[in-house]
Image (cartoon, rainbow over all chains, first blue to last red; front, top):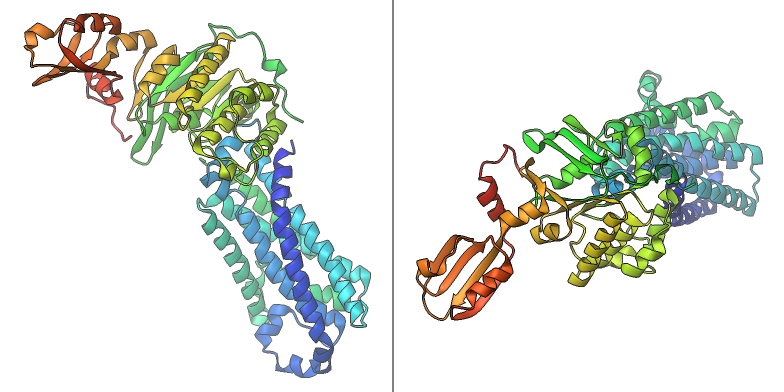
Length: 260
Length: 313
């Protein structure tokens, strides 16, 4: 049974393409300023408030790797894409229940588990569109300004966005099966992802605050480390995947038992 | 990929029970939406589930489909206990459902909607149904009128040739011609051995197509009987406009109840045959006659008393 997956995937195509285009534009904008930025990088790095540097995970800003990791990935992937996935997943169930589409859908010989799993699986569309689109854009833009990025590191940086974004989607789906209003589910999910991101940034400012970021998904994805130091934190990715599965499991548990 | 229904497509057994409710109860806090509702629907009958808006008809249907869980009591649909999710999901391949408020993917065209459901449960009767009911298939559902949506709903409910169709206010929004077509279609389905569970708040519709009727009010089942019996007891609402005032004793017969005479206008409920009434009336100087179905509430008042099970509507 893949009927729901097909329809849900088709519904996500347009927004995924628009988002990929927007992020490509944003990346291009970052790259345009990079040459001028690199010259003043030392100064900028020094002037950066610790909180902001912690938020973005800034390191080695004068190198293209540090710049891409600290700016392009931190802003576009960790913040914007994370918020998008929370928002998109937040709309998967609540809206259908409220508009009574779920009544008709569940009159088919399809289990509630299958409905949720197929809808979440449809997020492959933005996941693939964004990763392929931005991989190409970032690599090409770096080449255009005469810089080269290590293809393997860039590939891993992209690959490891997947578990991170899945956790954001897991937060969204949990809100979506719990709340009745689609607006509340989406706002709650994206708000929580944003707050967790802020908390993680705060926790980076001082060692004594370190523990407060432990529950933030962004703690477990560090694009600067991947691009600058070629440190591939696979254990962190595993933590994210486990968290996603746990969130999905709870969402299934809730959705299967609730009244619609 | 699509669920096949061959295994369940056995010859319908008229003695078999297709739907069986046993003390089915659903409470929302203090509100009792369904209060210990019990009845059976046999295979090959059109069962009318009649009640005013807000009586709890949709709640019963949503319980039967497993969309909501009963507070107590149980029910079985095509042999599957509604509390057994797996079993209920499996028999849904053989159920057609037409909800009261139709939630389609608004951006899909009618054709895409049907393709979507066809992938989940088949569509061997789609073309045949589209000859009877023809929503504009190439337009998006968001542009559909109420009637077009209802027609699309009817097609999707029957296109996989289910043994059981659960229809919630199926003719609302349909024009009278399509309503007649729907009624005729349901009778054909019944004659082919299909079971139809038909909820409505329109008495005349239920009288016309249903074999048996359950009447629900304020969440409780207040009557369960053959439609013929109900017809006999419900009668017709009649208003006669005479040329001049008439004496009550000269006009009223034993078949007339609830008689109200104001000047030259007589209102009453007629429990006899309409033809006999017309024969009777010719002896008076009648200026106008208006014969209509009684309001459901009148029937409740006259035949079931005003005592209703506690709870809200």
